[in-house]
Amino acid sequence: MKEMNFASPDMTYVGLAEPGRQAAELGNTGFMTGKADEKCDIKSCTLEELTEEVISFGEKPFRAKQLYQWMHQKLARSYDEMTNLPKAFRETLREHCEYTSLLPVERRVSKIDGTEKYLFCLNDGNVIESVLMRYHFGNSVCISSQVGCRMGCRFCASTIGGLTRNLTPSEMLDQVYCIQRMTGERVSHLVVMGTGEPLDNYDNLLRFLQLLSDENGLHISQRNITVSTCGLVENIRRLAEERLQITLALSLHASSQEKRKELMPVAYRYELDDVLDACRYYFEQTGRRMTFEYSLVGGVNDTQADAGQLTGLLKGMNCHINLIPVNPIREREFVQPDRRVMEAFKNKLEKYGINVTIRREMGRDIAGACGQLRKGYLSRTKDSAGEDPNGCT
Image 1 (cartoon, rainbow, N blue to C red):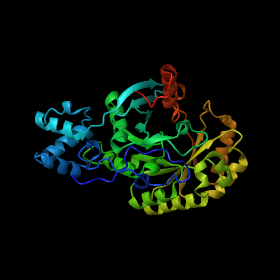
Image 2 (cartoon, rainbow, N blue to C red):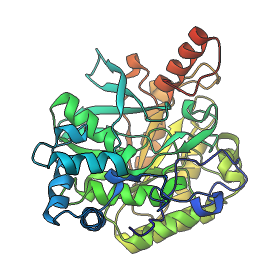
Image 3 (spheres, rainbow, N blue to C red):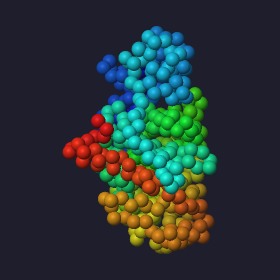
Image 4 (cartoon, one colour):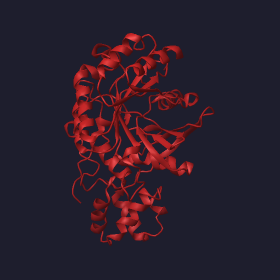
């Protein structure tokens, strides 16, 4: 089978100097290398690629459709569950193909709002987290796109410790599949806002979106998918040219370049004007309204002057602002503004005709914020083992 050019999980932390560098520049060879001693990541294959692989094993093409349905509709945990496939074929698959199946290590359910937080173990022992949120319009899952993160946002727990590696398309998919299988409830909406910078794992993200929205799989509408980014300009423009129908959410968090630098090291590489120009280009190419995420940090970016500057910054843009009360974490001194300050900030934006909401806090009693559950788990494991572990090994 021909080599597939997707980012390998062997990506190492390379620092913030060049956060937009692509997988190929980092020495990644792809989730399917074509090397005799490496197995292909079968759950990351399209139906067309899978058909080609199945034929190479001497099987009839229709077996590919059966296999694809087992993985992406019936959400099989292993080849053993694929009972309408010949046993000999399943043994061939086991020998030649890697089958991604995440292991749940922890599941927490909020007593406040029913939000569920999951910690999953990967095949290499690393751990990642995902969240299930129930709304009146359906169930939404928030997934991680990387193990750790190298963007360094000051208020975020997921970036503490840096980046370990990218997630493959199958590891992103299986977060959704595991949660749907464990709850028995359909997942209708998806946000890529968990640990990691999605556009720093661009090729794998794109394949994940393709498989998740495929009519032969879960077929989640692209319009029900939101991808977050801290502002990797080149990849925002690349994504715009894909002309997908997903929502792009920019982690803005400040109303000026200088204040953004205080909160987000990525601002030292990308000027805010260039980031916003890329966001305008995304809207021009896709027709999809931009979302701007703005974490309100008490005494840092929550003043009326900040709100006024923000209205000028986004004037004329077709957008929505999502105000997020910052989640306090032990390693940082950031605190939430009180409710009156947040409402005053929101009212100022609305006065100038900007669509704005204050995000409802969910799962606060179960370490619901990005990176908190994983970090707590790794700390407990380190204390009990007396060393610094990678995760669940």
